[in-house]
Length: 241
Image (cartoon, rainbow, N blue to C red; front, side, top):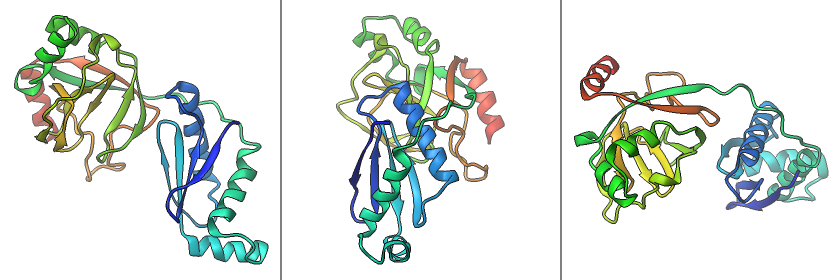
């Protein structure tokens, strides 16, 4: 298994498993994260999977205490953590992915809920209906969560509707807004500033502290966007409140 280790500050190690966003690297990231969750290295505080890497956060004091027990203080906490990771990674083989969930996300495209839909269509020399058809027929995969609680970084959008970010980011975007930035699409789980081109909105809550887990999506999920009317949006939105 190809990998590189590098420090992130004095209490984290970046485990780089690839350089390109691909399904193979995604499976390696997911598989290694699951293994380290099931077989935690002493001192581990958190694991953060990303597109091509896993970042392991640790408590240096706890690692040093274990280090002293193992090697009489010969290694720094970072060196000790890297040594343990090398021992794992040298023999690690990514396991097969569990069957992925498919989450259907209803989206009301255009109008006040998708104010940039026509701009996306004009940029790509398509009609609004063609943009909606292409966006709602994509084969999407959630690679990671980040930026905001529950924000999914989704791969699989067609380059036919790729559109640059807005030159003038909005200071407030409603929760549930569906956007495009470059060749990526995503859904804002909470109200936040942002510069993505907004093409619609879903009535679903992607982040809800009253739920366990609070995030609707997780890395590895497949997504299907389903166009709905404004009346359907309002009905579903009311049911969510």
